[in-house]
Image 1 (cartoon, rainbow, N blue to C red):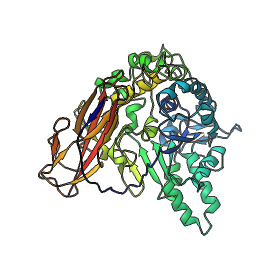
Image 2: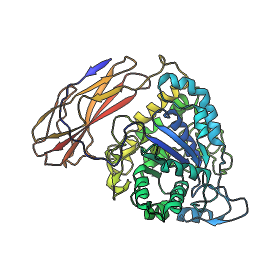
Image 3: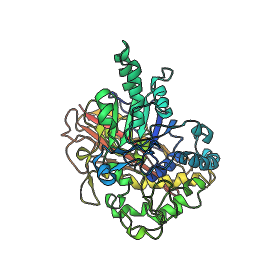
Image 4: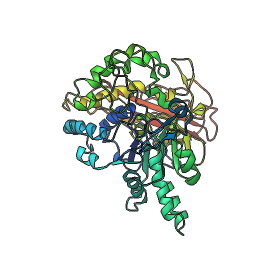
Length: 497
């Protein structure tokens, strides 16, 4: 069913250091921890939303293979150094698990493709799997097929589009690719221009700091390369979710929901999703005891039930690429399903105290609420994608379409009346529910609370005290009446003149 909300205004675009002209290109590096596996499974269900150009095994402070010759290492990272001391290898999950998941993906690919265009084939995805620098934490001394693959993508002049490099574990394979470029071209006359071109092309998204290669090599030697650093908000989707996520939202991560809507009876791919008490165990990692049903009552991070969520700490890295209408890819400071990052330097965006948001459940400022505020919509969307693995198009639900009729930014005067307008459509023909709300933590208008939002298709009066340059972010949330209910958004930014 279509809905029309009237809106017209003029637009002057603010420049962005991020450019999403078409679907973003990405290469994912991962150390293969169980939470990486779970993020990987969810990622495959969204693989139509971005161009996957590489899937690369890498190491981290928690997982490395060793060189097989008895060489030992002591971690550069304090926590790992204290926990494990000197080691020849550490909890290495091997280099076959991606193909095993892609075999399962191959079974559900035909059905996924009934629901959306653009899903890559399993044959293609297997063709871009590479083994990177996996022998030790932070190892960047030698080229590998994974680092060479990333290097070639960065040097390729045939495709100048930005490429989004995800570090789900350590960033060492990415760092090695950059170091190899520097070693080859660093003494040439073209080096300043080449380094600038590569720095404009690459965007690095890192989940926490899982080796020392970003601060030890990338930032000092590639100071203009853009880095998105999620060091706190990912915990809402990680092992400690029971304390990071409000109790009122726990049901979306507990076994009743995860078992029924994601893991069971949705095909072989989601059946491989690691959850508490599921009886699964990842080879190579003796610390993966989460699947043991006899130990879930007193597990490391609390007490859990069967099929409870364990962790997807790396999921924000790829959710940043999924366009749900919040414009967060072009503007990480806007916030979205991947959380919210603030620019802290010429080329660094980061979370932390500056991205604290008022958590209405905890009744306090919370460094993770920029992620948890979207949890319900994210989990219901995940459940719908799991349905796509097994149901026909007619049996499943699909997200509504939302488009502002006009530009996304408007320069306004105090007291001006703005009509709130968008065109929305439900591809399944259902009813849609519309809500406009102010994302006050993102905008720069200093007054909290309501700012005069009216009902659908009505108007918004610009505050009389809005000063020149101050912004107000208005979000339209559109939710359908399907099962599970799905939500998409539009963002209108008002700028005072």
